[in-house]
Image (tube, rainbow, N blue to C red; front, top):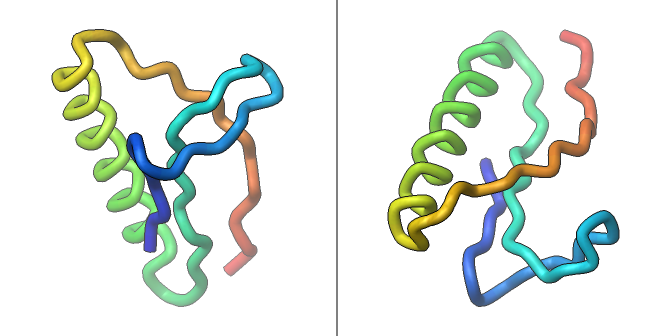
Length: 71
């Protein structure tokens, strides 16, 4: 699962002091952790490219490490 927003639901970013869309990949466990993480990363890259195309400006990502469980 990935929880993300664009336009309708935004979060307030303390670093930039601006409202901004968010992207939150769900943590996974089991035998396919690496495959799911790769899928989530590929999906995020494609989504960011789509947004950049829509707005005509680069997407700036503020990464916050949430951690992945040990398998």
